[in-house]
Length: 117
Length: 114
Image (cartoon, rainbow over all chains, first blue to last red; front, side, top):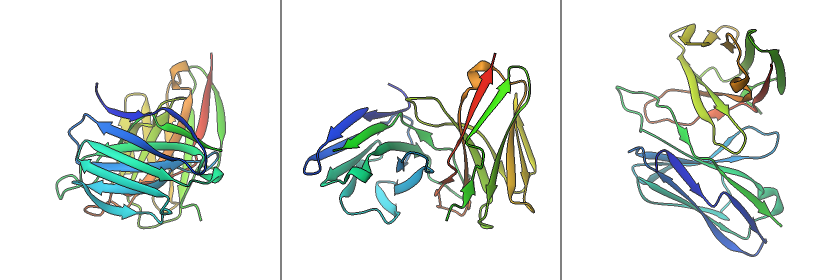
């Protein structure tokens, strides 16, 4: 498989459930991201990992717990979510910025559509 | 407070004509701008970008214009094709070393009418 893949594509969970979203990139990138897209709102950056180290946590509630075991895989562990957490969760990857390449393009996965009941 | 604004939620354009999508930003630290295109059930895909040292960047049918003084950028698609029907997101970042934090607009849904 190529590009950025996400599983599952759709997830329905109750508020007391624990579930995990998985993202895998096959592009040789070393930075990975989680975004949230709610209806009629901009894409919101949640977490950034550079070389497996978390470098950004954009004030995300602790009921969202990311994990990056290696540069190719990123997880988002979900626990006691609220109905307002229902959204499309997008994973992306890129090369980490360097002095030669200040900003690089992010490549997105198809997203996981999450519904919290 | 939205730092990147796309004030038109939707736009319809006749096939073959020019599509112009607009984006405004408020953060003067932004100096690198990107456009992403999103089809239903897919993630956004990168389309074109521009650095603040330029005022225009062209790639085939797509041209992005940047007006730094007005904090405004636009995406021109000429000629528009049915396959261009999608949601277009504008994004911006301060291109500091190590900072990959993209701020997105809410998107504009472009519909090309055959």
